[in-house]
Figure 1 (cartoon, helix red, strand yellow):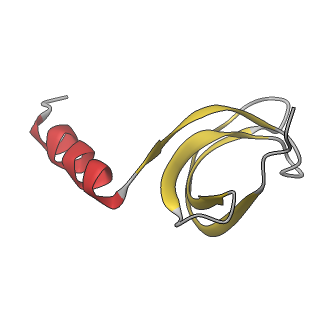
Figure 2: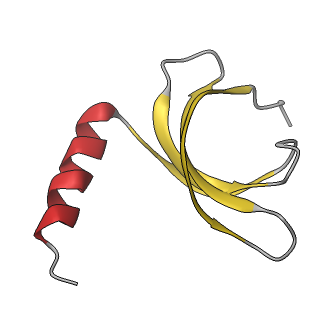
Length: 73
């Protein structure tokens, strides 16, 4: 299996932290030297391991932001 190359280009915020130190974060991440995308996933404390996550282009993230703003919590 090919190795996945990634670079966190900007840390935007921590959403939560588990008792084992893993953090769910919103970051800008470049995957395999491509344009950075908004990325939400869990990271190990040393950032060597990650959980499954979801990435968004800028257009997708703006649409998500619009949808979230309409939700009455």
